Length: 140
Image 1 (cartoon, rainbow, N blue to C red):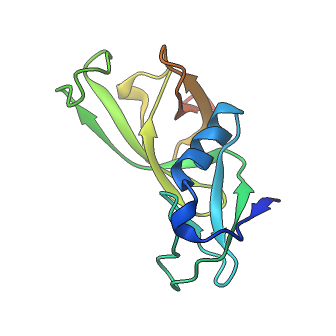
Image 2 (image 1 turned 30 degrees about the vertical axis):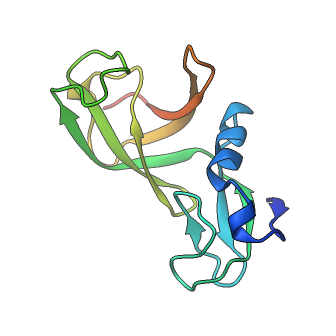
């Protein structure tokens, strides 16, 4: 389902802000190339697959599976307070693209490649909304 189509020159559009605005509304949206249909993530002015600057924003389901993950024991972003260790996951979205994020509400020991996940929208104290994921079914 297309949300809008860009007709503005790529340099005049803040693609990341458009993505962030969708997150703030509780929607995971990505650019889809109008020429080759590839998703663009992170958002950009030019398709990495075919070089086209034509795209539309598409709302995605937020459903996916853990494709890979890594456990960090050190905090690399001192302004982000979180318990350590923490996991960074690579999620294969149902629609095809992969995104890096964090898992919420699950113990690291429960994480496995292939587990189903669902997008959640985490509002930080500064008002920014981040895309994160939670397990969508309890691990067996």
